[in-house]
Length: 163
Image (cartoon, rainbow, N blue to C red; front, side, top):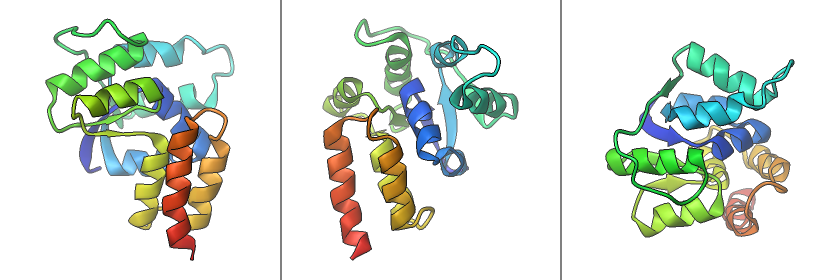
């Protein structure tokens, strides 16, 4: 595990769908606010969806730590995004992992270090965790749940690796 990162529900769900949750857990020490845990747990009806089951297992084994923000600043966005952004403001320099475009752009506008799943996939490819072919396949799996401009940018970068 490397740097610490703050994990939002949408990022985790799309990382699982893309097949990159294991490299993510290897790359970062993940922190999630209780709101993210609640968002994932509300879907649990036997059997739980894969994203919820992997999250719960990762919390249980200590690979994801639950941490409450000390101050609630924001009124924007959903509960999970708000709590993640609040944590990011409390933990300067900590990477925020968020896949929803409005919250991502808000974080960028406030100069918070932030990644969406396609950028993570590109980074994982650059450092050799994924092959370019695996990266393109991962992007394809999240194409219906991720902002088109996020995907377009990632595909353009990856095309340079495939040549």
